[in-house]
Length: 413
Image 1 (cartoon, one colour):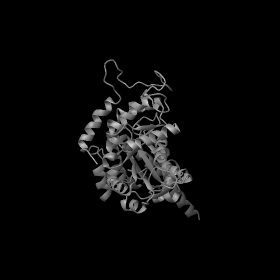
Image 2 (tube, rainbow, N blue to C red):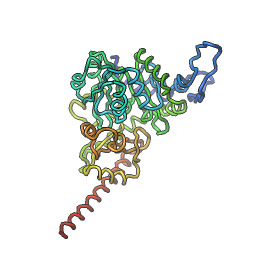
Image 3 (cartoon, rainbow, N blue to C red):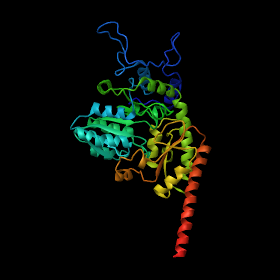
Image 4 (cartoon, helix red, strand yellow):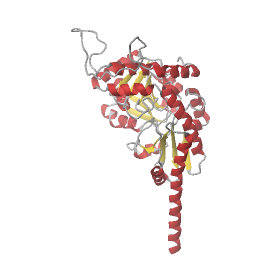
């Protein structure tokens, strides 16, 4: 599979990202130009100009595509307007009526919605399985299985899938393996080196990193797959716009620094939450045990103490009401439906990112009504923990008031 040494991968990305998009030619701009044009000059009928119409290709988008491909030593990525546009193109490129897809049950809610409510109407069959158990994936394989889609760490339960083990199953069955690597980015995980055929990204998240530009990308080393994906994008017109590509390129230049800092802080925050008596459960790969820990240590390529990503999820004792009181008391952490920005963000998955997922399926994948997802930003760990402590103190105060009311009511009775 050509997996490289982890230290070499880290050094390569740390060296590559600051100069992303530069041509290093005399008189050329240091920063990749924004080419905000719908169409391009042609020398004559039938000219072979690289860029002809921005629905098909654009110089700024192409610069981002080369950069994203270089991060995984792959072909230039194919960039899309959003992460969901990228996933839609992936499924349309590889699946047709009568085909079968196996999808991890813990994936992002939008992926579940796309498969259950759109692809099913087009005749595509699907099974959702526990992707942390390769044997469950193997058992779901059919002769018509064309694609296996997993997300690791999963959103928002942060469960770990063994990419190498699933890649073996995919090859044996003749299916392709796509891995949603949005949470870790190529800085912390290289799916193609682990045997995946396609890496999937919402570049809106950590890759852009500043909450200003939507985008998605598919990365592969397979020329036939790449050609098919680009054809689908041309047909559907789902290409990323030049401005968002330009903003993403500039965000990409600091990706290793941001991800390392945020991941290191997330580990400290997760460790603190795990010791707090009001917290029922904490999910973060740094806290994993047994087989999950061994897989994470093997396939996550970051630095020690900063290897497992910036997303933490946790459940507060008291369920939905406690969660509501908690987020309303926060001042530093912002309640939004997003991850991967420079600010620390908090999300309530059951009512936000996974609201369209059936409740029984949510619970089966560890998404309780009281689960909260934290995307750790660039603030100091001490400041984030102080804000979380404030939220937990508000929950405790409300519980005290409720206990007093109940006691007084009982006395009056």
